[in-house]
Image (cartoon, rainbow, N blue to C red; front, side, top):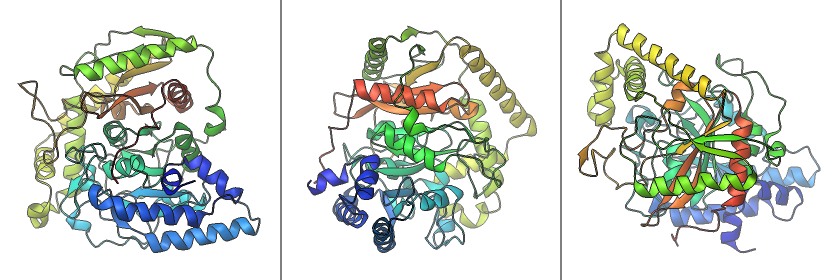
Length: 472
């Protein structure tokens, strides 16, 4: 097995090889570190490498194997952590100059679970300031590039993690999703990313209340089975997170091997409000959805009529950011992302009625999806309306000659943070420019397993992993 083959192994295969002592964790870790040192200067995916610590962890993992000790689910497997989750003793900046030199004194709950599962942490990956934008750029580390076209964005806010996974710089990335921040970069980079049901994975500690009822932690991977394995390691209740769900007696990795005999799948290309969608995105999603009929599943186009959720989403978004950052604004304004400053100012100008109206709209949206899932098991949409766009801009302001709002290019993801429903992005095709296109798979409340099973079934029908970006 050559070095590139090792870098692109699945996490499941790595874990098995380490347990059987066919490969050592240190051998895998050193091979990936060598590739990071070569490729990362082009991508800027990792912002704070932890290579010495990774080597020490890998050595200990190999010693544990030799001694016959009990091994964790991800024993010896390398992983990257978004620069949003604290790691004890490792700089964690949240992409903000405010926290440029912050060294946490405790681990994030999920980071601790990954450590306990035996992961080797390669470092922190780049993100926009406090995860605010759906691109990956900040005033400390600069901008991350898309592996398929270095002049394009990888999306965000877990853009560093998605770019790393697709480029063979680690098989697993821990991401966070408050409006699409796992699914959008997975789509634009050609990875698999799942936002599990709200509360399935604990979020603790947090830097404030922003996204308090919107944020989901989850995996970005190249293989669906790797996402299932990682979720098995990090899911479950936590006493410090009031939103976490009770434990499920489900082994995702085992259960994804089972295909449901019957499923009713609906798909929508606009959800009733998305107005500007790329024709290649539409074509690839429709062709991909139809592949499920090969499994004997029912597929039908559904006409959903939701009002655009942009207004309630942005109301919640700006008000909570404003609450967290209002005391920082005077001192740090000139060292903050301009779009974030505008959002904080907008939130400071909002009223309690604005917030209550947004919460009411959120309730209505959830109830409409409740009615939808009485008749359907799965909903399919595009993940984003367009493939990756150029670096240097926070979002397209004009599409097909039309002035558009900041979220017009990504209309399909925030609504599922408002509802908390499980949703995944899976690669489903390529644009004429060779850029990935993603399909979003959404399940009913708490039904992460069916989302994973449908994802695995599609991966088997239309695998994408043999295509790799040319970065050497």
